[in-house]
Image (cartoon, rainbow, N blue to C red; front, side):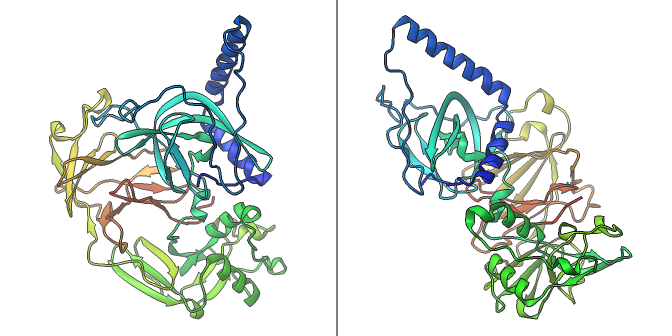
Length: 448
């Protein structure tokens, strides 16, 4: 199905503002002006008498478009736009599916349905068609442009109303939900280790609570000012329900540096709310100055980690490797280089049937399947105000011992790789070598 059914007004405004900001309002305005000018001109010349746009019907709880436009050509599969297998110089541009029940893709704008993408799938834009459309759903109008996106070797088309450039809110629906075990600070700023911060998920729950009809636990404001606040049984019960876990479930923590798994029974963990480090010392505290999570009394282990709450362990050990890059000739980089990439160093690393190539000057990563010798993934890692690049390890320089890692650390998933970027704002993302495996955004509380 192709329906997100995000018809609640607050979320609608949130998403539509997001969409129009990222799809370049000015550019789209020019397209609309040009489009309607042509319609008026054609109408005045009497060339078309029935050029009114059809209203798209929708079914309850779906966005299954019924005959949005009559077929004018019997286009065959061989005639539709194809994404060339040859490598291009264009930097990929990605969006994410935000349709809760999936997003249909078609053979052309307003064309025949071919299949569907799932919520959270990352899509590479290969064409802005300039064809605008709308859908009526629950008395709301969702409008957008038909986008050409890559689907293996083909170009297929989706309506931009159901994609977004940011995948933050999608983390509410993400499975598995991954957190970080770290620490918090007391009133003197002294770090206290062993704290599993769940605040980001509570924040995301507030974003979708009206749409999902979920019950957010009420914060004990009568205790604001204490650090930490011990949260009571009523709050705990509602939070566990929100997290979709029970007292008999387990916290599993995979420590990357040690390649080890630590476990804690939820029933044995105290639920607390410490003051965020940036609010310590403030005289006017509120609920929003607090973090929420479990106290891990004996977890005092250094190194990056991933934490999961559930009734079974999703991690595995013994496959993780530090990426030690080996320098290669630029001519061996498996991608056509543009003028900005003709200098600098190029590197490679082999892991379990996959070849990783890195052009360090632009942090251009290309992953090749060793057996088929086909490029299966391409990424650019960039720096910004809130994101910095992690130095790489090479065979001639192994000082950055906690640089990039790769491994089959998740059961039943392809190899994951991580730590190409450090985040001052936002949260890290776990990537997989397969383009078909969605990345996992870590639910961290990185407020400032």
